[in-house]
Amino acid sequence: MIPCDLAAVPQGVDMAAKVPHIVLGVTGSIAAYKAAELVRQMRRRNWAVSVVMTRAATEFVTLLTFQTLSRNAVGTGLFDEKDGWHPEHIAYADRADVLVIAPCTANVMAKLAHGLADDLLTCTALATRAPVVIAPAMNVKMWEHAATQANVALLKSRGVTLAGPAQGDLACGYEGNGRMVEPDEIVRAVAAILATGAGKKESKR
Ligand SMILES: Cc1cc2nc3c(=O)[nH]c(=O)nc-3n(C[C@H](O)[C@H](O)[C@H](O)COP(=O)(O)O)c2cc1C
Image 1 (cartoon, rainbow, N blue to C red):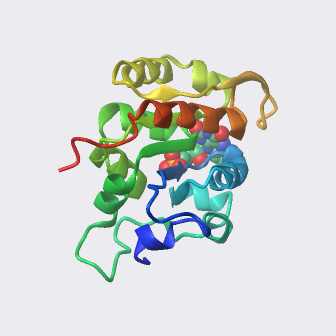
Image 2 (cartoon, rainbow, N blue to C red):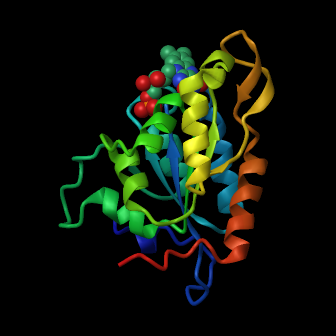
């Protein structure tokens, strides 16, 4: 893991001006490829981006893709930190001005709703006080399942912003609600949060 705050500052950005730092969680959905474009769009806005992938996400897209597009190290394993004393999930949690999870699987939504923390991403989510934006992506039946809908209600009641999902053709062959919204919609949701100033974590330490 490289010293991240410096490495994450986009080239050509005035160091005096604070660059918003987005921690982007990518989970094990077929829509994970769309997260690559999401990183590009965030970088175009001169936001610094740190990507955290679940193990399942690495089955769909490579770490190298996100490392290159974000120009930053990518976190995957909870126990990978070898250099520093500071647990990586706490470092990601503290660094985030906004935590975005896109795509967000039914599994990670359930973990967020119930406070489970068994990997780098869910530990980060539990430890951060930054606003959280999730972009669910899943099969329509998974989305409509009572368990998922109960999790959605819980997450919304805690102030989590949901971007989507959208209606349409799903990769699994079904049609209906469950498509991840397009990256520009997620970027707009994040920009709206940053514009309110809510993206700074007052309660950090
Ligand atoms: C080809 C394939 C596509 C999948 N797509 C999704 C998806 O879009 N949404 C979802 O919630 N789960 C999907 N899954 C199931 C998740 O990968 C599985 O629940 C996994 O445990 C999620 O891990 P994570 O939530 O830690 O990333 C898919 C599985 C496969 C094999």
